[in-house]
Amino acid sequence: MNQLVPIRSPALPALVTAAGERASTRFLEFFAANIRNPHTRRAYGRAAEEFLAWCASVGVVSIAAVQPVHVATWIEAGTRELAAPSVKQRLAAIRHLFDWLVTGQVVPVNPAGSVRGPRHVVTSRQTPVLDPAEARALLDSIDTGNHAGLRDRALIGLMVYSFARIGAALGMAVEDVYTQNRRLWVRLREKGRKAAHHTVSP
Image (cartoon, rainbow, N blue to C red; front, side, top):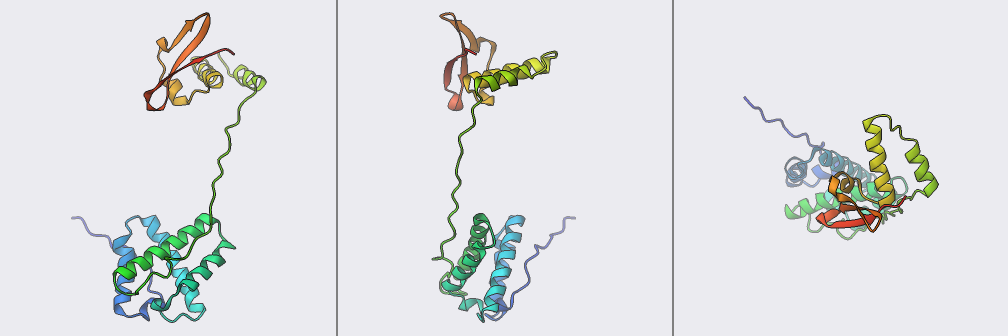
């Protein structure tokens, strides 16, 4: 017989119990009923616990008394200790918690709604390109005394000289390699199944 396993919820912080029974119930429901992913539940529970403990340390007496300035100050302090993605996750946790409390009529407005998190810019770098000497050294280093080596050298050589993706290279058939005007050509089916033709001239 299957038994229901209870979902563990964080212990009730003092600021939640101070707001009354409805606030306590709604707080527990946020973690038990609203968040299905256990990793998210754990991360959000930790963020809520730390935030409310911080609020209590600065004199906030109830979760209903939390103001945007409290959220903003806590987030600003976090940016001095944590990476931007971690701070943004903590802010998301507080936002979602207070959204849940607003819809449950525990608090009138979400104090985290107007607080902006730190900027997090991901810079993409250009893929490094091998120069001809490096490409030749790489190909010459492959042991071609067995089938695996021959296969690896053919694939790597194709990708080096035609800039093909590994998926396009693996999708080739024998007839996709042909000679035209005394030059060797390969037909690659790129994303979207579009065929691209490349000359191969090492």
